[in-house]
Length: 387
Ligand SMILES: Cc1cc2nc3c(=O)[nH]c(=O)nc-3n(C[C@H](O)[C@H](O)[C@H](O)COP(=O)(O)OP(=O)(O)OC[C@H]3O[C@@H](n4cnc5c(N)ncnc54)[C@H](O)[C@@H]3O)c2cc1C
Image 1 (cartoon, rainbow, N blue to C red):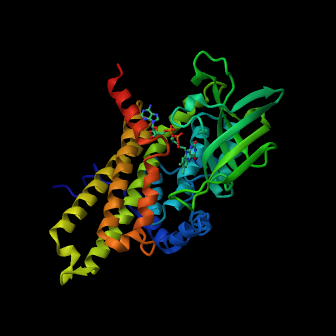
Image 2: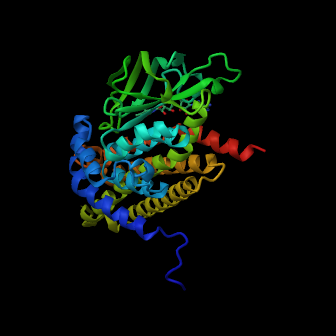
Image 3: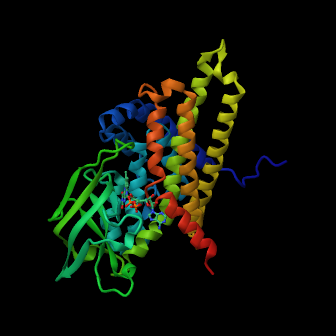
């Protein structure tokens, strides 16, 4: 045997990061999670605590005043915050989602203009791809942008935009060439600032879960931005937006793993306390088997998420399969594990007096956003069948 064998073991700094984020999450985020959900309000305490500790956007490279944390480290931060409050975990998750198109494809000047404000916590950034009529079918978007002298002018509506209204920056995909031979090559990506003329945010959606994370439409009415706020070349926006998802689907997997772990931890504590038939319900084999299955699946999901993040960090080609698989598997596990946690709490699990019903509601979104799990399966199948 070799105690120093480090294959399939997180690096010491990753373990230390997990300990630090877990301590912060339990002390400063968990106490507000239930109230944030109940009042459907932004988790400001979590945002403040994450910014104070420098955990709100660890992925930003050092060259832009960030910490340059790798993709596995970023997943660990999101996972540990999600373990106590899924809404709060969308702060680091969406900061990565919104800034990834910039990191992948923007000019050096644009990177320097935007990324340091996210690294410092002065600003947050959202990602605006979806529209009412263009959800899974992203290429059929209708938001338009045209060049007018030294400005781009945007018109249209994006919907379902996470953290809209709180974010300062928005990465926005819009059609610049409606006559392109392929719809996907007529789309470009831009960075919009909340104070740009013609930009507005709509009312909050009334949601099943992640109620602390505002989801809103955003509107562009002759919204005018400087010409150099385009990300990459005209016509490359959808490609950049989809490449982004290869890097961020692992973060949604991490969020799902965190939610599932939170529910599993709560269920283990509860079954040891709760007595029926003169003994703790943890003594019943039927309960033990449920716990074993839940923990087994969480463990498998966690490994797949870290592998997908590590492969993204290495910049491997063909990330499509593993990123989609990690997000899809972890989110299906989160839904199953949180539902079983509610089951193990019995009637108490069905009330808002315990956290597991919130976790079950929060888990559902991980099967839907950044591409529904049907779309993930399409991505996986396409990768299996190509060539
Ligand atoms: C809370 C929340 C936050 C979000 N945050 C963001 C954000 O920050 N930025 C952003 O751009 N978007 C965001 N989204 C949008 C999200 O990514 C979309 O909702 C999602 O991609 C699905 O699109 P849709 O809602 O239009 O569903 P549809 O595309 O209308 O799908 C409806 C159903 O049909 C299925 N379906 C569709 N096409 C196929 C197919 N070809 N084969 C099999 N089944 C199919 C879907 O899987 C789904 O079950 C968010 C959504 C929500 C609810």
